[in-house]
Length: 112
Image (tube, rainbow, N blue to C red; front, top):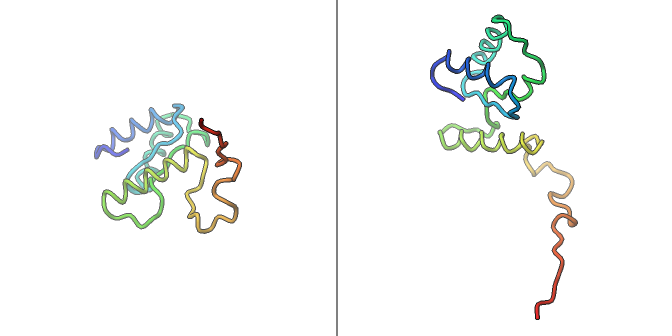
């Protein structure tokens, strides 16, 4: 999220922290997010680890994104990884198979 209005962004973050959403992505510098969280705490809201674990800022995977399209791709990839409980690592480094044979087994049936 990024509305280009600091106070709107902070209000949105404050409302999303206690929610059941699994991913909150913040565009912009990490210092901005840290400042918002600090101010939210100073305003009296208890912010615990369970709330913070779903906040990703700056949002996106580190893929060298520069253009808006590349940044969008990095964010979508991060969201997918988070929702699947993955870390977004390159498959090149994966030691085990990507899909087990059991998962990809297709039963043969005769068609008459």
